[in-house]
Image (cartoon, rainbow, N blue to C red; front, side, top):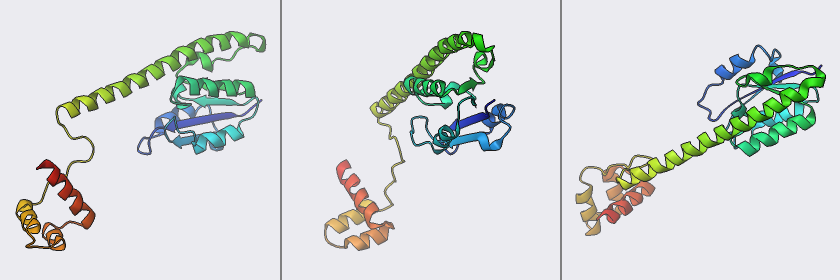
Length: 201
């Protein structure tokens, strides 16, 4: 009889793991066997996931909340599922009820067949949703740029009397350091704003 392991993951450090933790708690009673990451699924350096792979042994069962916790695309998820199968590790996904069922030893091929079909469909849907999201983001950025909207950090407005001091500086009446003091800017920011200002003229 193997051990029950659990894996939970969110894509960013700001996201919360509690929902996945609560879902896995009834199945993974030993906290030492619950691994977690706050990292993108495409990140191959997920520390928690790598440590879990080292700890898993033949006969163990891995519980996850949903199939996309394993990775971000269909091929990556299928590769991991194939790896677990070869190692003799059962993967149970709470959001895929058929994967949670146990069958007699001589009938396990039935559940495997059903699971393979469901996994194929789910991974395809998950990948399509991600590709659609990326396409929408790209279209949104293009549309915003076409309307002249600035994306990213807000552009810092020029200080009051910038034009007056700029003219004095260009006429040689004040030095650059005096100009920086008058507009309260550090050197790097000052020259960046000068360049932006000159490009807009």
